[in-house]
Amino acid sequence: MEMSAGQVTALVGPSGCGKTTILKMINRIIEPTSGRIEVGGRDIQGMDPHALRRGIGYVIQQVGLFPHRTVAENIATVPKLLGWDRRRTRKRVDELVEMVGLESEMYDRYPAELSGGQQQRVGVARALAADPPVLLMDEPFAAVDPIVRVRLQEELRSLQAQLQKTIVFVTHDIDEAIKLGDQVAILDVGGALRQYASPEEVLREPANAFVEEFLGQERGLRRLSLIAVRDVSLEDGPTVSSDAGSAEAKEVMAREGVNWVAIVRDGKLQGWVWESELEPGRKMGDLAGRPFLVRVTADNTLREALDAIVTSHNQVAVVYDGERYAGMLTLNRISENLVP
Amino acid sequence: MPQRTFLATEPLIRWGWIWDHLDEIRTQTVEHFILTGIAVGIGFAIAMGLSIVALRFRRTYGPVTWVTGVLYTIPSLALFAFLVPYTGLSTLTAEIGLVSYTLLILVRNIVAGIDGVSPAVREAAVGMGYSRARLFVEIELPLALPVIVAGLRIATVTVVGLVTVTSIIGQGGLGLFILDGLRRDFYTPLIVGSVLSVALAVVIDVTLAGLERLLSPWSRARTVS
Image (tube, rainbow over all chains, first blue to last red):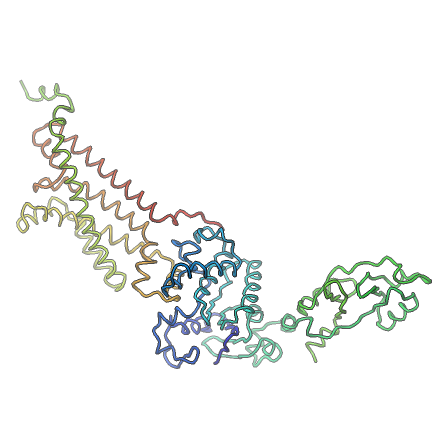
C-alpha cells in the first residue's frame, strides 16, 4: 500500500479493522510483526524511534494536551524537544496560533480552560509545530460535537490546501473519509484492505459487497458531495430578457415545460413570475418579480445544489457568479452526473 | 501531706521555667525539625526509587507495598527497642525507624499519582518523541505532583509525631520535654513539648500545601465544557 506525498489518505473501517494499528505502526508506537514500512523511502525500522516521531505530527482523538502546560507551551513541545532557540520557537507558535484560528489571548491559558474544539485546534497546532512533512491523525474530530466537527473538517481542508502535508487520517465515519481523503482505504475486520482508491471511484464502483454495504444507502448523495457546481455545465433555464414581451415569455415556458420564467436584466436576475402573472402588452422588465431565495455558487457541491432544488418553488438551483446570473441546475442535470 | 495537694496548688504552666529554658526549647525545636526533615528526605528518595522500580516492573508493586506495609505496622517503641542492640542510642536508630514509617505512604502516593496521568497525555507525549526518562521527569512527575505532595504532607505530619517517641532512645527533639515532664510529673515541659510539636506539624503541613499550590497552578484551572 502506497500513500502519496502531499495527499490525505483516509483509513476507514469498522472497529477491529486495524486502522489505528496501521497508523501507530507508522510512528512505531506499535511495532509490526512482519513486513516493511517506509517513510519518504527510508525503512523506519532502521531509524531511532524518538527521532522518527519528532519528524511526524501526531493528533489523537482525546487530544492529550499537557494539562500542566499553557497553550503556548503545549504548541512548543516538539520545537523544545528538538532544541530550537526561544525566539524561533516563539515565532513559530505565533504563526501556528494564527494558522489554526486561535486567539492570542489563549497563549497563557491551561488546556482545562478551553472548549473541546479549541483543545483540538491546539492539538493540531502542536502536531504542526516543527513543520513535519507527515501528519498522523487518529479520529481527531470524533469527540467534538457535530457542528464543531464540520468546522474543524473545513479548517483542516483549507489548511491542507496551503500546507500540502502527507496526512494519514483514521476515521470510522465514511462521510468524513470521503470529505477529507484524496485517497480512501476501506478496511475490514482483521485488517483486510477491501478497496483503496479515490473517494469518487469508491462511490462510483465499490470493489465488492463489503465496500458497498459500508458505504450504505446514500452512495449517490455522497458522490454528489464530491462534485463541485463549477465542474458541470449549467443550463440557461427558462429565462427571458427584461426587454421581451409576454409572447416570448410564453414561448420559453412552453419550450422548457414549466409554468414560470425568470427575468434577466443586464446579466443580473431581476426575479421570476408565474405564467398566470404575465400581462400582455407590458414588457417583462416592468413586472414585479419574486426573488430567488436560495443561491448557489460555483464553489458549492452538487449535493448542496440538490438541496437548493428540493427547497425551491421552481425546482431549480440558481447559480450566481457574484451578483451575476450564471445559469441553472435541474434535477435532470444533476442526475446525469451520477448516471452518465 | 500527700504530694497531690502540692501539685494541685501548682499552676498549669510555670512561665518562669519557659523563660529559663528558652535556649533549649529553640535548640530542640530545630532538632525536631531536622530529624523530621532528614527522615522525610531520605524516605522520599528511597520511596521514589522503589516507585520507579514498581512502575517499571509492575509485578514488584505488590511485594514493595507488602514490605513497606509491614514496616508501617510495627509499633514504633518495639522497632526502636529492636534496633538499639545494633545501632545503639543514636540518631541513626531514630532515623531508621522514622524513615521506615514514611515509605508506605510515599510509595503509594507516588505510584497512584503517576498512574493517574491520563493515558491520552502519555500517548501524545510518546507519539511526539519523548523518551521514557523525559516523559517521567517532564510530564508524569509534574502531573502527579498534587498527589505526591499530599503523600508528603501525611508522611511529614506522621514523622513529626513519631520524633517525640525517639526521646526514649535519647533523641526526640521536643519529645525530650514531654518525657521530662512525664518523669517528673511536671506539666510545663510536657505542655511545651506537645504544643510545639503540634505547631511544627501544622506549620510544615501548611507550607507544603502552599508549595503545591505554587508549583501546580494548572490544577486549579477552571474547566469549561
